[in-house]
Length: 411
Image (tube, rainbow, N blue to C red):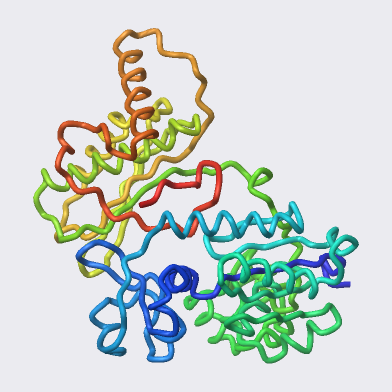
C-alpha cells in the first residue's frame, strides 16, 4: 500500500494572489495586465496577473524588462498589509472545514480533510465549498489539488490553473506520474533536476524505477527519499502552526535603494535591521547565541558570515555590535546591494531582569520603545542615528505565517 494512502490531503494555491487582490480592490484593473512591484526605486515584479503572464511577464523580472515585454503593463505598488490580512481571512475559511491546516506560504496551504469527510462530504465537494466561499467573500480564485499525500496534492494543484480542481486517487498515482517531469515535484529544483537528468531520469516514472542503491550512492540519505518521491509516496503529516517545531531563526534583510560603499550608510542599515530582529525576538520571548550577516553584491554574488556568543541575547544593541564586528571582518570587494541580519540558536528567554543595573536599564528602555512602536508603528521611536533614515522595503518572506514568531510586521 502507498504510504499515507488512507489520508485525504488538499493543497490550496491562490491564483496570482497579490495581483488578484489588487484587481478586486480596484475594478479598473480587472481584466488588464498588471504587475505588483515594491515601493523601492530598484524593484522587481513580485507577481503579475494572468493577463500579464500571457505576454511573458514573470515574477522576478526587472520592471523595465517586464514593461518591454508588455508595453501596456500597469504597475501597482504592493500593499503587504492588505495581502497578509486577506491571507489570514482565507486561512480562517479553511479552518472552518478542518483544524489540520498547514500554512505553506502567504498564498498556499495544506489541509488534512481525512476527518472532515463525514461532516462535509467527499473531498471534491469540500474543495468546491472552500473555493466558493473564497470567491464569494473576496472575489478570488484558487487552484486545489486533492490526493493521498502532500507531495501529490501539491502536484495536483499545479495541473489546472487558474481556478482548477484536480483529484489524484490512490489507484491513479502510477498512471499519473509515469510521464510527469521530475521538475514538477515539489523539492526538486534546477540543480537536482540537472543531476538526475545526467542519470537518464527525466520523469517521475523514471525516478521510481531507478535502482535505489545508485541513488543512495549519488545523493546519500536523500537518494531513498527521491525513490519514494518518484513513486508518489510521502508520509509527512500536515502540521498546524501550533504543533510545528520551534522556529530556529529570526532574521530580516533588505535590498537597498542604491548600491552602498560608504561604511556609515551601511551601518545605518545594519542598525535598522538589528533593531527589527531584536524587537521581534523580544516580542516572542526568545534570545539567540548566533549572529549572521548576509551581503549581496550588484552582480548578485551572495554570502553569509556568522559568529556565536557566549550567552544568548535579544538586545538590538548587542546584535548590532556583533553584526558590525562580523562586517568589519569582511573585505568588501564591491558595493553592497543587499544586507541581512539573522539571530539563531534560539532559546526561550525568561522574564527575570539582570542583576546588573546597566543591563536592567537597557532592558527596560528596549521594552518601553517596543511598547510605543507596537502602538504607533515600527520606528516611531528609534535610535538617534536612524532619525530621518527611510526604512528598507520589506518583502513578505516565504516563511511568513499568520501567527507566532514568523508573523513578520509588513508595510
